[in-house]
Length: 443
Image (tube, rainbow, N blue to C red; front, top):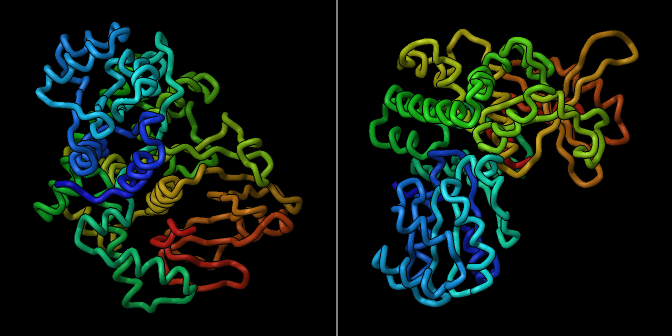
């Protein structure tokens, strides 16, 4: 299936505005739909295209990138190898899985300067140092990221084409929607949490309407990721850190406890491994800030972080991976919100994913007040204008929000809107806006 993706519009702006002055580099986790999106774009927006998949390209094609001195020779051989006629300024050449041929990425500098055609690169684990250490990275790239399908894209894919607009309108109105509407939207959100945004999982759900079949697809994707991590880090640390994300969030600690996952290791010792995980686009990092203020990147503590998964559907499967398959009864209870388990950590991952996909870098803050030794934590802090926007995530009740209260008192001059993101309908609790979790993307 070809799904509607928001990145398509950004790709079209690149084509129309850059006019071949830069290549487009699309990064993203494996199986996130990069190749499908790019080929669909090429078919619709160009008169012809060549797609070179470097994961299975012939030796003859790969060898063309070893000598870029004669571009006429290069283009003639490329057209002959693929049986495609390239048309000046009306064709695009796609370098798919370009991490497998670093020389192709290096060649972008010369190809863009030549100016005959457009170029789109796609890759997974594309920034891993061992794949690029011997090449000159081109400056003629416009880099974008394709994330797993967000909630709105999921609605489009499943035929609920007007729901996202209704949610956006409801958010702007800032008033309760009523029990019936809220229950419907929460059920739709839980379905998204279970299926996730990986196109293959979404397609399986649409075709079979069976969550166990969806779970099997997600397990295959997780196996693929873990095998990738073992290849880039043969010590096994990367795969262990990835697999432990649900248990780490469930522990409700103020940071990722590396020592509880890998013996005799600390955050400082696994910095490079964590960087590789972040580059893979399979995880989302939230860093603690030492001084919450506008420009939080200047105050982030790289040794204190939380790690979330970029797709909550994969997160759910990983969390329940203690059995050979996730029985449909578990999915049905999760869907109906009747599973007897504290699912706060699942909603926290969902909020992290939604905020990150909407373009936010993630930060959090922990502190003690002058009144005692109790530790407080603000789950996420956004920056809007010259003000901070603190967010506290709750999976159930909302009457207790001590951390949010103490933070707003401590930094009263810096705080703008403050939100409690939870599973109930919209309401206000004095200065705190209690926001249904399905509206998170609009913050």
